[in-house]
Length: 476
Image (cartoon, rainbow, N blue to C red; front, side):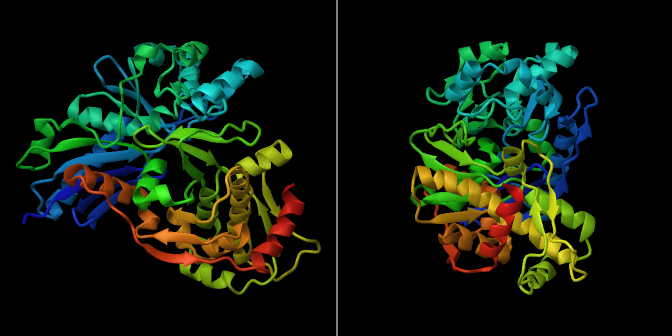
């Protein structure tokens, strides 16, 4: 029997991975590269990317992978991309500008929408509190300060579906991305005229909303030839990376609660109905396909703080060495407060830092600072976990994302939340596995499940409990 191969494109915030998977759910080979961003000097805090440069890198990776593995037939191509990341296209469907999730251009204009009744309306219809994070304010900021770009724009599209349009010339947006625009009615699953009117956005720039797993179309002959393929290849609609991390877990309907540890750490519950809690900043997005709500509480930036600090101050220390050294620390000498949403709520500022007890000990090492950041992440996640757990009690947590590769992080989190944390096959690359699951299911119409590879059980009276007491004194 001929082996079936699938091309998977996982576009993240920091990097992109292009991979080949097979029908047995194995990752045959992959290539990755860092994503490039530039400051948009038209705004105080804006980052943009070149869609064309991203496309060139993806095409090079595809050609190298297929050539290296001597593969001339693939069943389909599928792509996911970060939530709240979009591309503006002109009338010829040519990309004008790329606006990633870390583009905060809308922050300067958010005060124009300060009316409380208006904000309540936006939250009720879109499921998200009105902030600069979502697509609507990116469009508003572009209209207000870059009229030439805005006036040239004909379509507003997510990154993964933009790539689909490049390969097939067909425009679409998956439900998981549409729900992050703040222009989408999450209860009625449609673009909302009232939301578009609030932000003064023409509803006609929004493409058709389609379900993940749909065959968007066959890739153009030019790409078939360039990739050295000898048969037709379908492009499958993907969706948002966080939602695909859930797809990678497998049988998520039986999972009580999911924590996705990455750049940020969304704590997620899939439900048939939304949960509205403006005060506690509960988000209600759409899961792939639009049938379920993805209810989320998020402490803000977590893993990125840990990664950046390591790259600057501990770049010559391996992650394994850090893990070993953490086990030797018995008393918290450094307490960190860096997670953005926690510091913002507690102190009305996004400034954070480290707390030490004077006089400072001469025994403090870089490991104390690194472990302090890791434990700050754990405590911040716990604070947001409590919010969702109070709404609906949970008995089990399923973890996925790169952060759970740290045994110290996972065990500390289990200890503090007081629930077992299960890790399934492929947990550290769950978005990529989600793409492969979707591809195989689309081809063979079979449900796929992931086996639990390890479960961390909570313990009482541990280091993190002592740290948490000191953390509360510092942060609250």
